[in-house]
Image (cartoon, rainbow, N blue to C red; front, side):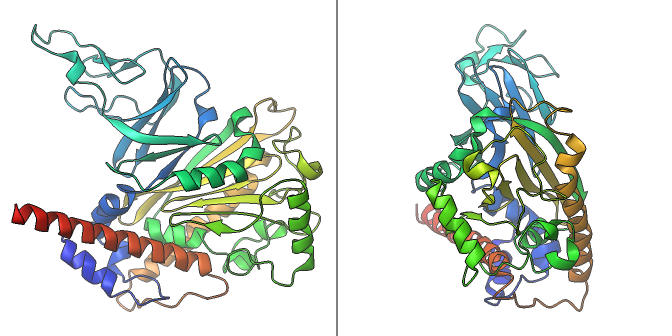
Length: 411
């Protein structure tokens, strides 16, 4: 059972501008708390609708220890469910994707339609009411081709984010995309260490030499242009091409478009397009990168020729699964317009380098000599923003529980 007072005390002990107390990076109770207070209340990016190309397409994923199932129903609507049979709770679909006209549990063959209703359940007796045993739904929103799910009974506000994302991501034409490659690596590090690492480039110049060839690793704060004349010229060009550029943010999201390094077309090993069929053809394919970040777990980089999505899902207090997904234009032909190895090489190398860095970070955090240190106000602004968001979300959850418990006690 989670000790919420202890979690509150740990959060209260975090110094402003500093990283977290040790227990919040390696404690079993803190992990259970994070699942309930953060992953159980937040909008989570599940991927893109192009992964469900036709009625009957399904996508099964794990959110920590929680299995979910996303399907495209007979009318083309996308729905999300808890991946748990309403009979005795068996996992219905193993993690992965596929297509099926019905959803069938492998245990006792209870069968559901694509809308989640129980279609068939044998030997259950004359009084059994199938209408009472449909799959439990999860909130899902789809915007600009991106899919977001939320476990909370009342999810955080979504409309403002949806409007902004449509403006920034819409030109990428994700409705005309396809998933070209996907990979998952296991990192022996707490999910927050993985995400802090992914929210800063303080380490990039030396930690990611390949990425540094194309990505502006010295960029300050929240993609600030400051006195960078070339970057400002790029932004002016993008606005002339009717592409959104401003670095904007809400409580749990960030959006920006920024210039890549000089003479760079895309995020690749050599900076040249690695997919011949472009997703965004504005300005001849020189559109920099459109970055989407969603707390608590992911970021997306959309360049003219492909889209890369990074998602960090907690598995245990000191293990995180990092999934990378690469999307290209639906008409791009593998072996002709792109090569999977070339497509995936840069971010695969970067993820493996980050795995080593995060795991090393975890080993040091476990030391009895660990004390939280300060973030760089120039190079780690977004890492600090992530940790601030985590603390605020966690504190609000504890306050909400306390208010609910007080009401129940009074009643």
